[in-house]
Image (tube, rainbow over all chains, first blue to last red; front, top):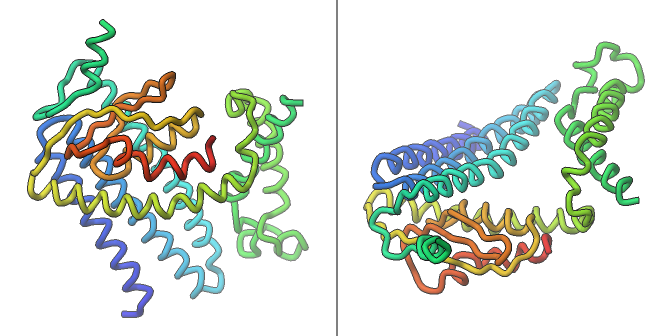
Length: 123
Length: 180
């Protein structure tokens, strides 16, 4: 196996491990907030490595092939998808957490809740 | 004058995105007329015409949304360079965060709390960057934000000392360089 393929394989293995951990965390954690931790962090990180894999593979194909510009195109499209992911994933998690708190779902096992104190002061 | 500046910046951004998405479309193996001189450059001539027309339409429709505050500090390319440099410490923090959260997923040792931090940033862009950075890094998740008082409410998976310094301190000094 050549070294570029080794790099691609390592990136792919890291991405699969983190995505799997995120899914396990979704089942193990007790409430919506802690589950969002698993869903936003581990799966975003895993998917970032998956886009890195696609970009490394495309650049490798671009280098070894004479008519490989379509792979350069693919690398750039994947980079745009990565930026969109980095903006939308935390925003979505933030929206879910805020909606959950406004619905009155308390964080389970919480030792401190500043937001609850502030809301009770207002009302 | 402000309207023209807003139009121009939106137009340039739209054109940049269009051209980067259609990169390499002018290379000879894609071109319908490979013997023409313009098919040897990286974009085809048709791609430029279409890109400019689409960007003009987009700029005329949404320039008042993109440049809502009429403050053109983000047109400075140095600030975009700092955003690119900022992605390196952000990535290191994300790697640490993921190892930490992976450890907590396996062992189940959590001590969650919602804490208040006061990052002391004014602009919407800075607060958005900070909220997203916090959500992407160590066991912290932005739940709510009070943008008038610049306060954020963070769900922390393992409560620790001095939340403002420990959660936001690393990012605020970077974000202040490009967003304020």
